Amino acid sequence: MKKWFLYQKKADFEQIGRKYGIHPVIARVIRNRDIEGDEQIYSYLCGTRKDCYDPRSMKNILSAATILKEKAASGRKIRVIGDYDVDGVCATHILVRALRYLGADVDVAIPHRIRDGYGLNDRLIREAYDQGVDTILTCDNGIAAKEQIALAKQLGMTILVTDHHEIPYEEQGGERVYLLPPADAVVNPKQPKDCYPYSGICGAVVAWKLASVLLTQEDAIELEDEFIQIAALATVCDVMELKDENRIIVKEGLKCMAVHPIPGIRALLEVNGLRGNEISAYHLGFVLGPCLNATGRLDDANRALELLGQQDFGEAVRIADELKKLNSSRKEMTALGVEEAVKLVSEQERAGQIDKVLVLYLPQLHESLAGIVAGKIREIYMRPTFVLTDAQMQVKGSGRSVEGYDMHGELTRVQGLLLKYGGHRMAAGLSLEKDRIEEFREQLNSNCELLEADLIDKIYIDVAMPFHVISEELVNQLRILEPCGNGNSRPVFAQKGVRAFQLNVFGKNRNVCKCKLEDSEGTVMTGVLFGETEGFEHFVGERKSNTFSILYHPVLNEFRGRKELELVIDDYC
Image (cartoon, rainbow, N blue to C red; front, top):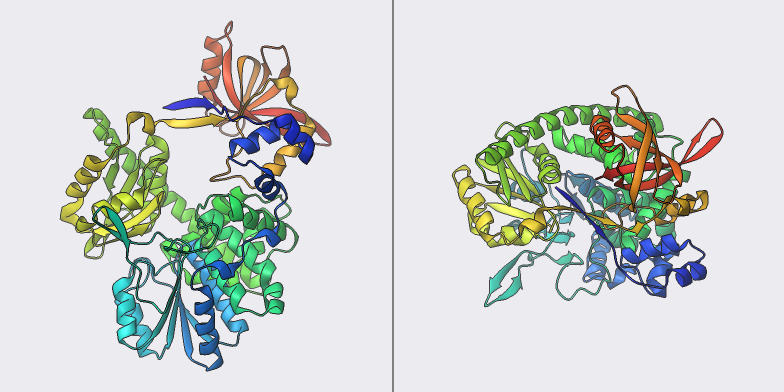
């Protein structure tokens, strides 16, 4: 179920438009993103990498850098332990690259998703010790590995944690007591008393900040274009909000990719048919990222790491093609998993009651796909969703949340049922014993305070905009709002009193419909709808003498030298 809401935020949009040389509609959209005041508006419109925050304001980062420099200078063996997703692989690449610039003796261990699970474990610690590793440096993990880090310290090792996940805590006397691991230094902007101005960065950005402190100014400048591309990729793929510093990182990273992509990213663009195209955050999150993720899901994440570090373009293309093929297999497996999950929810529907928090046990699903399937089910049913599957000697799972449901916080409330857990407000991972699945489901739903109104797909309209306002200049200015994504959504426009005529359905699967749209003021424009065209045809046919409302975004269609403004129909009622 969807419900439309119109933003009602106030400002002098004409004055903002004049001051910054933008269309008043653009000014309104920016205000709807809670950007107000000269400093924020300037940063949003004009921010560059020079406006990124000083890494030295991050707690313990100078201490971590000092220790690493001393270890590098003395020839001590350092091991970077990352994670198998895009963010973890990107963070690992950045730290290894920076340490090698320092001349450090450094190698890598990325946990295997099936054998090791997420983050540090005793095997990884003992293996490092047996192989003469002096210092372990984590990235995109470690903040919840209190026992494993204690083991490393008992063995006499130095251990440094860089992470961005929520800090584990316990409720004591109605207050949160945070449980930091006993590492030699913890670098995580979410930890208490950290002065870093923006804590919503991903693990690769934390790694980049540490690398910036480690390197000389000359080395940092030489690697800056490479690192900002990788940080941008990780930021989008880890679904960080495209606000504040994140927005600048992604915008600047995309600029670098357009001019001089690193060989690994250039190869991914090549095998996906994107060379020469304008690359957006969408392509990072839904085309390049899934290829890098596929190897960590179905094979070994070291292949993705090898691709990012590859300097030979021909070899990079070969690896990228392998990853693309793996991702195609992953898509097929995911589709089957979603189908099975929908069947389980349909059983609840037939029984007359769908849980507010969905806990779906799919024992045959490849455990690496649990998070993707959970995300798809969340989109379909607009409910926090956990998908659980069989793993070695236990059940493992991933969850994807909705606004208003703190998934990490809710797992903390039931942590007594869990073997391990971690994550964010909007996504989490966990493991538990098989015989506790039903109890887990019951407790989550018993604790859930979401109302039915919270489980509605809310679509927020930026501007109720009649068609005559649309111009080529406005469409071109909409690019100012890029990169769009989580936290900086693509603008949504609406118009009521619309009439559609001259419908023409085409495409291989009859999945494109072009028509003429006339609004209540008599302005006629070309409309395009992608996807389920049969329903739209039926809807319009029933309303031959009646009008309806649409959500849309305008585009400039250029074909054979001819330009035409078109309205892409996003929804209708």
